Amino acid sequence: MFFGCGEKTVSFVTDANIKLNKIEKAKAEKDGLAVKDELEYFAKVGWENIDKTDLELRLKWLGIFFRPVTPGQFMLRLRTPNGYLISKKMRLLADIIQRYGDDGSGDITTRQNVQLRGVRFEDIPDIFRRLKDAGMTTVQSGFDNVRNITGSPVAGIDPDEVIDTRELIQQLQDMLTNHGEGNTDFSNLPRKFNIAVEGSRDNSIHAEINDIAFVPAIREGEVGFNVLVGGYLSAQRCAEAIPLNVWVHPNQEVLEISRAILTVYTTSGLAEGLRVKRAKARLMWLIEKWGLDRFRAEIEHSMGQPLLPAAPTTLIDRDKQDHLGIHPQKQAGYVYVGLHVPAGRLSAEVMFELARLADVYGNGEIRLTVEQNVILPFISETSVSVLLTEPLLQKLQIAPPPLSRSLVSCTGKKYCNFAQIETKDRGVAIARQLDEKFHIPQRVRIHWTGCPNSCGQPQAGDIGLIGTKTRKNGETVEAVDIYMGGKVGKDAQLGELVRKAVPCDELLQVLSDLLIENFGAIPKEAKTLVN
Ligand code: SRM
Ligand code: SF4
Image (tube, protein in one colour):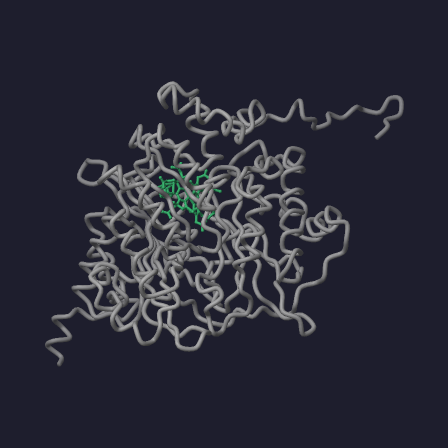
């Protein structure tokens, strides 16, 4: 731009005068992935001697999480594309945590993934070698990276499936992580990033809360995906993903458009102010700043080709399944069996047993769900009755009572320093008490989350509980903000705040009232009297 004589000069926004947030400064000094080369050294000198920013920030690029709540015991976040595992991998994960006794566990996450707990730093180089040999990786699973890519947990076995997404999601992960070696093209996003690729009809992956969601749709007789963008949950704001007005074939086009969106997001991040405030850095902020038309045009420009407009409707036309219990597969003679994992937490012993059951009764596959449960596929119809007699199925039930069945919970206070409250144990205990107290004619999905970051997706729950603190009798006590109205599946919508700061010790009563008023719960004694 040129200015004539006498015209006022304007101050341009340049790299030099943009005030980067402190995470951006740390990334500019040294890329997160750089710590990969220092891992052996870190293991040798001990975690106490690792530079603080490397320890608390950059190691998350390798999926290694320092836990201030349990210093010395690290969390490793895997990548489990499409929630697809095999028994050999499950056994390896069990073997890794077994040596840590009661400190070791495997948590199934709300992105159908696994996190290992109790891990000691000196073991990590060896653990990484073993994971690599087994075709697994933890790379780029935390911080400003693309997180585990979700897909239908019954991909390839669902009789009503539209697209089997497993290979596509693996290819997408391989592109984003350079086959697990780490990919600097995608390791400096302005913020975290979630991608989901749905191949079933029930929106099993919560498309609405992903930064990019591919949902099945037929365009001019061809099966492919409509693309949604910008969905996310956070402490400051929650946004549902919006249609980009794009349809792609279920092939390399999914990789290409993902690459383009991530490239545009990364390269424009600085100029568009996304690297100034962490709270205003998710993809939706860029979309809103530019408007959808410009955003779409920038993606086309990056791809160097025009994009096809979206199909008029998607094929998401089912209520969301939780996949628990016994279900026919598309393969004749086989069923899949969904097992409930209370709050998603697995011990090494249970993980070994799951691997054994998958081998003995199935084909070795184990699937994970965003409800933090597991599915054993390819159980022959003739052997399912024997599987049901296995002792593990007393612990991981196929038909638990309605509230326990649908409980989802984030990590909470036991390991997460953001947490305002304990979540998993409390959630399991309260669900059990309420299940004992009431007949409830429907499933009620209660989602617990320990702080407003919303990892437990409280806005997706029929009832969502977000940890907070309040004052009671002059003391500070653990409490929850209550959300209601979240819907999942074909009519997905986010729930809204209905009550603030309910002390946790009053929760049993408050939830009892909500269940009676809104979900037809009948106290068991009352039902006995009526009968
Ligand atoms: Fe999360 C940060 C756990 C799913 C939104 N999340 C964290 C950290 C890493 C904070 C920390 O360093 O302690 C938590 C680690 C605790 C621990 O020790 O486990 C954490 N998030 C989790 C998991 C394990 C919850 C669970 O128990 O399942 C989930 C791991 C998924 C995975 O496998 O990758 C998890 N987090 C989510 C989701 C749900 C989803 O993706 O569907 C969300 C909301 C959706 C979204 O991101 O749009 C979520 N986590 C956050 C946020 C808020 C993001 C934001 O834009 O503000 C943070 C904090 C942050 O990034 O600043 C966060
Ligand atoms: Fe931790 Fe908060 Fe996420 Fe729960 S919601 S895992 S407490 S950051």
